[in-house]
Structures are given as structure tokens and as C-alpha cells.
Amino acid sequence: MTDPGKLDRNITIQSYTTSTDAFGQPVQTFATFYTCWAFRNDLSGAEQIKDQVVAETKVLFMIRWDATYGANVTEKMRVKDGSEYFYIESIKLIGRQQWVEMITEKKDN
Image (cartoon, rainbow, N blue to C red; front, side, top):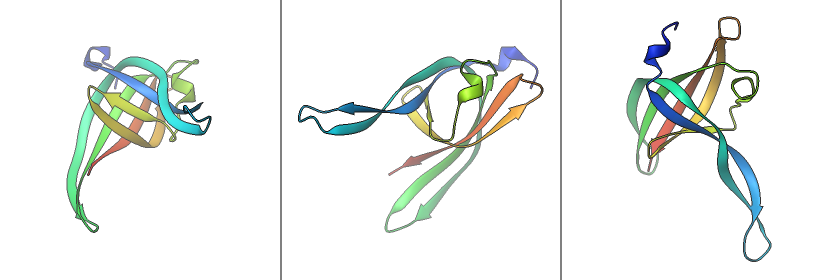
């Protein structure tokens, strides 16, 4: 990908964070790690039966690499695109520190 004009989605990459609830118990939640423009390509959609029907969607997101954020995205994070959440399955660096490709999965129960 070399056309920055295709970065037409404003996404938020979220990471796990631990906070405490009203009773002092640790609670894991997601917090904003990085907000940026991205390219989105829907790869597939399928349904599986595992005690119930589950919709499964694979989506590729491509963002610009940068030393502060793009270099530190991990598979433990998720992508928020509008009101949808996609869990990162794999990350691949494209070019010489130019792009970060994320293959994600969204599951609707």
C-alpha cells in the first residue's frame, strides 16, 4: 500500500488496562492506546455453530508505522472502528518502517 488517500477510517487501537472497582477489586478494561487513520478491507465472513450460531468476520486494517505507536501495537490489543470492535490476531510490518498490517477478527454473539 503506497496511497495514503486510502486511509479513510479513523480508528482507535485499545489496550488492556487494570483499574479498581468500587470494592477495590482489580478490573481489566480497555483504554485508548492510539487513534489514527487506517485502511480497512473486509476479508471474510462466516458462521460457526458452537452451541450457538456465531458470526465471524476477518478484517485487515493498515495504518502508517510510527516509532511511538505503530511499532508498539501487539496481538493483545483491539481495534475500534465506529461502534465495532475487532481483536488483533496478527501483525505484519510492511516496507521499511512504513506500514503496519493488522489481521483482526470480530465475533458477534
